Length: 264
Ligand code: SAM
Image 1: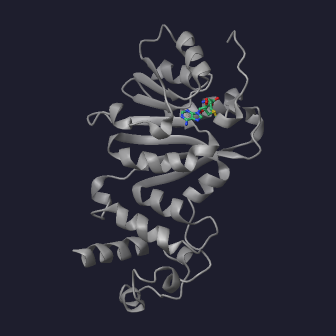
Image 2 (image 1 turned 30 degrees about the horizontal axis):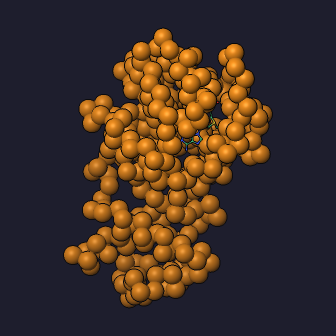
Image 3 (image 1 turned 180 degrees about the vertical axis):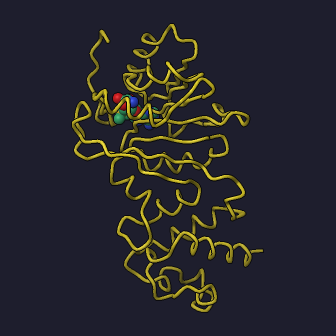
């Protein structure tokens, strides 16, 4: 690159500089000539160049205008490359998806928007084959957390309801320039098929989980007051004296099904 770019903190710009890690990420995605890839936050294009070498097309979404024009120049000859100057949180992914050919999404994500972005993407899972993300290690640990652990909460339950999630490997701060303050990890999310999703309306689950975790240290009896009685919880085989982190995803789905039935 001829022009030097000064990393912008407000856009979470920690660029990958370790070629071995780049190779490991590209290998983990394993995109082939039939794959259409969306890259979130291409930055200076360290992953983009590798993706263009193997995938059928790459649509990249980047918020930083200077990086957008750099990438336009860098990959000008690549017909399979399209760059969208946009805030990914405001991007309507339906414009980039095709029902016939689900896309593969990849991104070394800006850490400040990773949780809202994961929730944003839940609306588009019908057109997504899989997602491979670099995230702050702590967020990955929350994504894969099991019941009864301190990392288990709303993010774990909602994302595990919709996706199979696998933590692949961790990445130290030294792999980036500038190095972030925290460790990172690579995670793969594969959307479940519609027959694996038993709820008619996942909004019921979302509301339930939000209310259940409104006070983490309080019991379900307290947190779910007004929504479910002790008797209803007991009839569902759930002890109202438990804390929200003690319930499994299956427990939350069972309660949601009961709420859906109750609302008719
Ligand atoms: N992929 C590059 C790499 O691995 O070196 C850059 C990764 S850097 C952690 C995150 C990138 O996301 C930056 O290029 C940043 O400008 C971009 N970005 C930050 N916020 C964004 C947003 N809301 N929408 C789209 N891109 C964003």
